[in-house]
Structure formats: structure tokens, C-alpha cells
Length: 274
Image 1: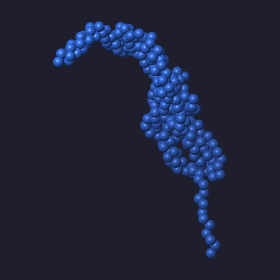
Image 2: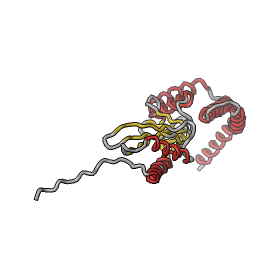
Image 3: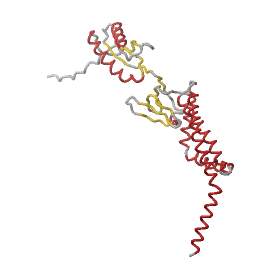
Image 4: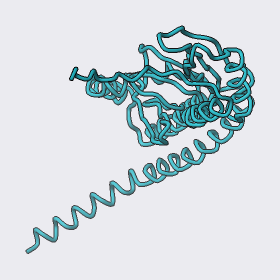
């Protein structure tokens, strides 16, 4: 009967000894980490305000603020570990070995980070520009260390891993795009009149930009008519809408002016001789 009681007393004595020896250290380490959390956020806010004075891209500012937060937190973690009496050199060596294994297991993630850093600092495109890359296209909405988010013309989000972007052929349209439209008129049409009508039509459309000026020219002499190329510039967001407005407007304008849109003659089937 006395052995369980003695065991309980011994356990209590051990816990009291551990509490008296390590309790103050654990408390002070916890206070250091708590102070580090508030210091990290305070320094991050100061860094954000300071970086706004410089002409930096949003992803660059976010990256620098994250680095500052990590640096400040690491300092307080080191102080907390030293306060607990933990030797840092063996810990660092162990973390290095573990880090090598983690790096092998996360090659894809690290590849995205490396590609993200390349994109952020080389700036092949910026937020708000329209790009085509890796078989997809859209307006750049955000650039992070891991991926780039595009907004497609159908308002869906396309998330592209950064490693799929680095090293690929990139088509950066910027903030404007050029339409490539064509219309064919009959050979007896007054070409100058047709081009003037198209020019007035484009000038009346608010989506068509005046700078750069639209390109309107005779493009091809076809078998059934003269091809006229229309290449106006519009904002990226107006690309699809402008096509849907200009094409029917051309048809209406040509009908109003009696300009014939050329088309291939319909084939007639031969009738058997009676």
C-alpha cells in the first residue's frame, strides 16, 4: 500500500523540481515570443509605409515585408531558445540535415519559389497587363512566390504555377490589344468611300482608341472581292465586346451606303438534259 503513495510523492517532487528549475525559463521564453510577435507586426507596418515611397511592384513590396517579418521573428526565437539554455549549433546542424531532405521532397514548390523570384525581379509582366503563356491567357491579377493568377475574358480565374512561366515564350499584350478584322467588298466598290465609312464608324465607337490610331488598309485582292483589313486598338477588357460591336456596325453601315459585301457565288447543281 505504501509503494503507490511513495511513487506519487516522488512524481510530485520531480514535477516541483522541474517546475522550479525550468518554469521561470519557460515563462520568460513565452514572454519573449509574445513580444516578438508584436514587434514583428510593428516592424512590418513600418516597412510597408516606408516601401510605399519607392516605385516598387506590389509583389516586390510584399516579398520584402515578408522577409522583414521572418527576420524579426527569427531573432526573437533565437533569444527564446538561448533563454531556455538550448545549444544552437547542434540545432542548426540538425535543421540543415532536415532541410536537405525537405528540399528533395519539395522540388516542385522550391521551383515555383525560384521562378516567382525571377518573375518578381525581372518583371516580364506586371499586374494589370494581359499576357498569353503556357497555353492560357488573361489579365494578370496577382503575382506571388508560388503562382500567378490571371483573369480570363469569361471572368474565371486561371492559376498558373510560376515554374510553368519561367523559360517559356511569353506574349505580353500590355494594357491594350489590337483587333484583326477583315471585310471583303465587291470589285466595283469605291474603295476610298468604303475605307472612309469604316474610319468614321471606328471613330464613333467609344471603345476604339484614338492613340494609337486604327490601321485600315486594302489587305488582299481575292477571287471574289477586295479584302479590307481593320486593326483598331482597344483596352484589354473591351477586346471581345468591341468585336461584337464593330462587325454588325460594318454590315449596317455598308447596307446604308449601298456598299456590297463580297461573297463567293453559290454553286448551282447541273440539271440533267431532258
